[in-house]
Length: 119
Length: 111
Image (cartoon, rainbow over all chains, first blue to last red; front, side):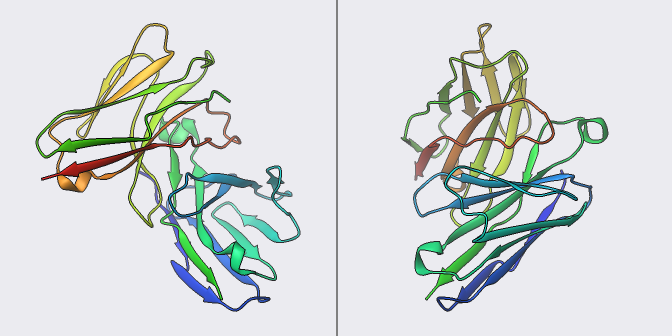
């Protein structure tokens, strides 16, 4: 199956600083990527949909000015957590879909996740 | 998007067959049913996907009745490494719409 990578796999930052997380589709082009957040013992919550070349679409309750998403190319989307606070500590997972025409599947591929800890 | 309902947790022993059922009463005509597995601190991993009847791959089977209002993931002869959270998701491929996760089923396999 297709591969989605994330970098870094984990990061620790101080409160008030910003952190950037990268998501790459390694062997396919993704016009749309998705960002999820997962707190311990909870399910994945969709944060936003990242569209190549246009603005991201945020889910209700997600601050777009705090979680900046940039999808500058067909293989890269970035999530920047600005002015991070301890409550932003979470597991962030990106995901992407390949074209059904090329993959023959409706599968949504997930990255390995990034553990963010804000101290 | 169709909402799914799964048992919160299940327990099993090594070598047993495990069946996890998911309810999706308001599934739409174009929706597919997809199951993912997630280990702690990892991204979800695709297990199987189907539209109707039965689908089988090297790791699992997916049974979907004619009304498609539920589905059952069957894991044959589970091992300790199958201990994970299993998510049932329902959605169609619009290309730009994300899958929505329910609460998932936490499977604990014991020796």
